[in-house]
Amino acid sequence: ARLGAVVEADLILAGAPVDAGAMTPRERKALRKELRNRVERESLRLLAVSKGASGEAVKRQTEQVLRVGRALARYLSAAKRRRQVKP
Image (tube, rainbow, N blue to C red; front, side):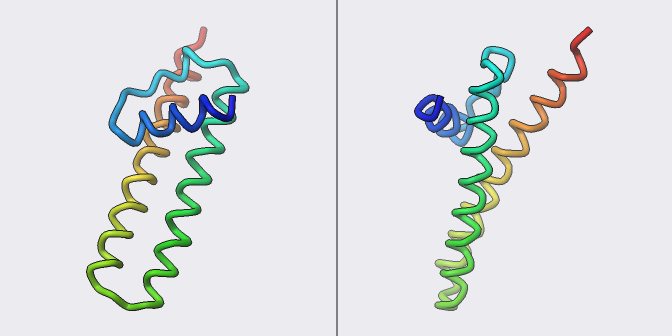
């Protein structure tokens, strides 16, 4: 599940559609954890870059944090829709 979560997270970050219904609960949990971990890592990198106060580096890292955050939000939104559709 761990390797699958990393690959799935990479696909989501690349813009692939989210298909939470095709995953087992264990795989979905691993994917959520991987996406959240990526957001946390990128946010920590942003803090580290900010300390150096390089404007361009801060801008690039901010864009990366936003990109990963949007991927997590897209996944969570798709998972929420899937739960609402269940009979």
